[in-house]
Image (cartoon, rainbow, N blue to C red; front, side, top):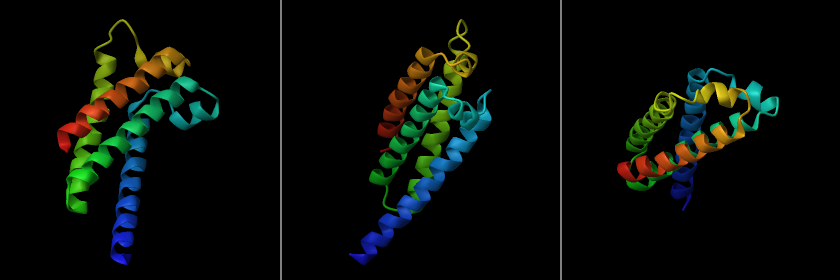
Length: 131
């Protein structure tokens, strides 16, 4: 039982670090500063960041469930997280009539919300693909 608790704690700590690193990378990829915008009450940024955070957590959950080792979990969780961020960036490219980053930075809640849904939807697909 203690071994299981230690293993669970280790998985929790390591995957939490992966989430934090991924959010840091996501912040670098956006044209706005996530925490400044959220601090200023920008709900569109909160939606987009929440979607990415949920998406990463979902991918890591799938990686934990599908792998027997922490190393494999980190590898597959990392691969899935990178794919999710790339897909998020592709969302901007695939909507040429809509400047996603600009609209989110301006506080457009509709764009922030669709970004959230987009991230969650693709995390489900990525998570199923890696499990």
